[in-house]
Image (cartoon, rainbow over all chains, first blue to last red):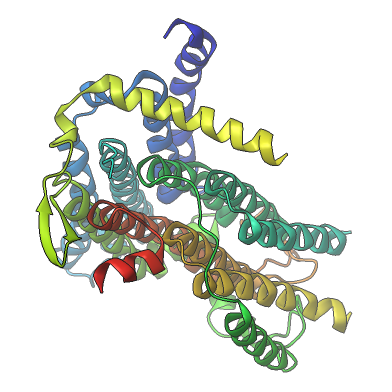
Length: 141
Length: 221
Length: 117
């Protein structure tokens, strides 16, 4: 345990920046490379790093599996929900122009919301898949 | 200049791919797959696909490698020598490759602006996106707005894949059926309900992964 | 320029065939999934190659750039989502491999066949 001080301290320093960078990638995706898919994977990578160094049990205290499963479903729901809201407001499915008075602002809100949905789903799925793989014990045959 | 970088990266990709199939130690092969992903991410940058390169670097060199190492920790990392002679597969592969190369002779050369791929909806996206969507990154506007339906389907596929993984893995080890003395018998799994066992073991496993991969790197390097 | 123009496609075909060979000639299931990954990446490279325009730049608008040529964004969008979907489907494949290991005690194809005969 004690011989991994550098890994532990290094991860402690790195993880907040990884999560912050994921958020930057998410919200800067309109202006530079980035978006929900990349941000979700990077956000998940932060938690995977935590799990690799501090153990699966500790990361499950921070982020219970149930929360991860809820996340992965919630993102899809948010994405489809935006589509239904635009339909309720009189537009086509996923036609973001009706979300605000100015169609261009509506597009901005729409893109922000669906990218958020993608982020939540990708993050949830990646962490949940990692939990499923890492939580399994080897069966000696 | 860009052509040289392009060719160099493609040659490196070819060498890496070839050494992956030659590699008998699966840990080494998985690390090579990480290198392969990183090289292809570099190639995507050269090809102006910065968003794709970003994704490939994050997914291929990050999550994908971790998942494969997690699998290897469960299934073991040695590959047996194949019993069959590789003549037939080699013949099939060379034949298919030759047909594909013959097919490329009709493809318009790489990078030409008059290629048919650039003349359908792409000019519309590039010219109108700034007024219709107001987002400078065209990839984002096509992804989230013009082709929002498509992306919603992809998100659903990812979610469905998670459901599949959980159905396969969240049940814990099942009893094995073994063929012994001419009949099938059922052997109980040696460790039941691994997920409740706790923290320490998994931590040891994950650390073991990194040690073993170091070892394999030493022996092959 | 023509030979150079087709070099990318040939490299893609080489990578594709390496992946294909791994898929059909190797008996180890993890190796097969690695082969599938190589095959998949070669398809990604094919798409991105088709989107490239010589002298173009990444499809992100630059201030005041009227004469800038942008590469085709559509392949980028398709491949961007395909990469993430690819890792999710590989995860399904890998979990199948884990279950096969638990059920048969091996992940070598010929041994699985011997056992299930």
